[in-house]
Image 1 (cartoon, rainbow, N blue to C red):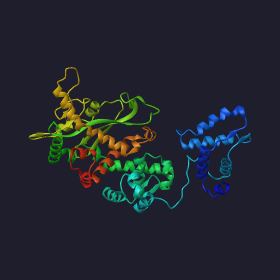
Image 2 (tube, rainbow, N blue to C red):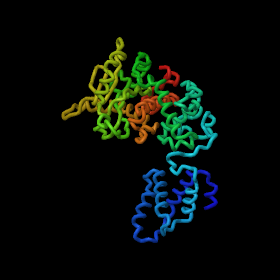
Image 3 (cartoon, one colour):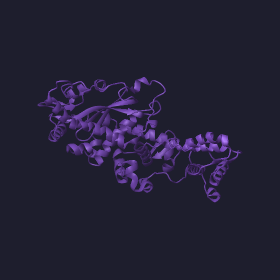
Image 4 (cartoon, one colour):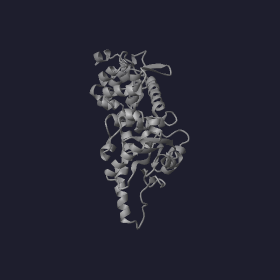
Length: 422
């Protein structure tokens, strides 16, 4: 074991070995009155619900506290602990800083392909060939400066997609991207804000060709009716969604949703029949769907853009919205309801579920949105995370030629070029 320790260059590796040894070795106390106290301490160390860094620190504290006492540790643990104490110029807190290796930064797509291999779709949600194509269409600069740090466009896009897709901590990405955790955080947030500034109108604007062009609206309405929708001229569905965030240290009431019993921001989503999801907001956690629709002026937008000579297009919503000429909701529940109305509601619910599929796809594919510890409303642009994730979901739908919504309705998704120029 001593030889293995001598070959280990980094303190972090020593700590990992110490942690691994602690999970498979028992220690024996020869002082009976301290057995219960230290058994409790070791239970904390082996508690798998704790962060690995906390468990390592607890184990080091145990070693320090029992030094000089009559305790018997395994020889491996003793050698590891002594080797750690011999690292004079290294940081003894692995979760504050991690080593960099040099020469391993992912500055080109070839480097990305070499690092992730066949797992690029898993970690970045796109293949390398797709990313090359997307990068050219998005016109990502070859080099981007975030604060004082200069990175390549490939590097920034890879960091952005990796964290958005996996929800990983910046510290866990150090060994992958060979950058300090603080730099990764700055690059991720900088790239997220950059993409939001460039493409937010593709997500948050109602005045685009998919929502204002008569021919496209008519084609979607005809396809939806052919898919079994009993209400003619429906081209989309609207609903609200909650994006959970950490409980803030102040102004908690404004973002607390009593219905979901969570702290959250809210967004109003409009799922079009061609697979494109639009999102509006953000709204406070206390605001119901009908208030969100009124604040964004949805009835007025529908009246302005969806009424044509001889044909009016319709948006279908759930019972939480106020009914209007272009915004239709189900028949109200209650005793003595007509069975025909109940059947109509059931048949309309079969297509209205597509908006929930749209929300679910965004949150399942882009796991950062479900990582509560990363969604700090007072410390991070959490609303921008949501809108950029919706943008990437639409890009992914276009480049993969469809998603669950288009497959269910049998609609033709737009090409990526059409989406980016809508």
